[in-house]
Image (cartoon, rainbow, N blue to C red; front, side, top):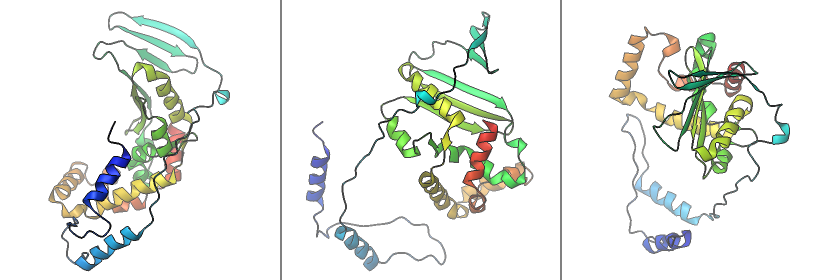
Length: 267
């Protein structure tokens, strides 16, 4: 509790004063033919420029509104059928929308609730024009917003809660999976509902994700391990484009709007 932000800031000022030059500045770069690297003078100028900036304190704005507006929720469904399986120790519910729910209580952990929802379909329903979109489908949805919350706002809103839900799609199935502690099961169910109905476009998070991938893929061919892994994948799948390893060309073929359209079709 004694280590608040002011204590840390004051200690940092003692270590490095505004005009101190008694420190080492270094960068990590890959060695590559034709690549240029910052000179000592350029690095010194960069440090000088940063010191001259007027940097305002970060303000963490957290949205106070609930994840769901209960006034806009659809009419609740009903349980229309119940079956007990005493042999395997589970209960099967049939809902009014046709969904089957399998409930099984375990003693593996006292403080954990897990779920997985699966339906037939998957990537196999889409052709070559969507191969790049399908390859990044899970990742792009994971960086998207939910309802009125951006991806970043959602992470802040869930601070202190232990509940998560993720979309994923395999060749023949689309899935939702999640986990929570018992006290946060309502939050998990709200996230589940939003993943079915209200994944929203978050351009800032999408651009950040694509920039990270671009940086990682730019020098991928300089890694012998990556080259070997990609060659092995291409050989195993007979150079089938659907299973091609991710590359910079993959990123060029991705369309955010199309990924959201596929999500609406599958979920």
